[in-house]
Image: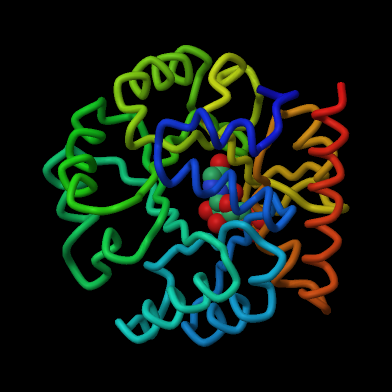
Length: 261
Ligand code: UP6
């Protein structure tokens, strides 16, 4: 997987959203995902407008938005189209199949109506994937990213848990676009899956709530990240546009060096 190009992996991706994401990455030369972790919808839309050209995915936590509205979602979707990026809702579903199906499609957010990608935990077992699949079967293209490992200190996802997660998703290759992981070991022989890796900053090593950071080069070359997630490294900087360009360039260069070996 690590030596393969994103365009060659687009050919073999089994999930439609993953296929499209590989193509966007190649077309925009970007493997940067922005974690738009701000609490006002206008702030998210401003980030989407100014940083949209440099990212392949904009990741939301919709439940932190204080003024959520259908308008907001429609505007975000329009910006995603304009700047050619995908929208990932980082919902991290973790309940029984029936409940996640409701959480995915109902309530205030109706996530399945606007996201391209969504995250989920494997903890409850594959009923969760069955539940999400019930919802997805009526949609064109949605891809799920399953959490295999986390970036936070002391997380409880053991090697055994991660391995079993990989076994679980093997039966759901039509709806699973990739995994959220911190090491390349899980998808070595599955280049059709995309490895999304959070915990990326240019200089710092962590925050005071257990988050652990690595540089773009380390994440892509040593940890096997296909896409790196950057939140505060960009949004809390003085000049988010310039900083986002730097992340994008360093992440993309790391990918180009990686495929050379
Ligand atoms: N995230 C992690 N680690 C994980 C999974 N997800 O940090 O293992 C998410 C967080 C946040 C983003 O929910 O939205 O990635 C990281 O943000 P940061 O760059 O500001 O730390």
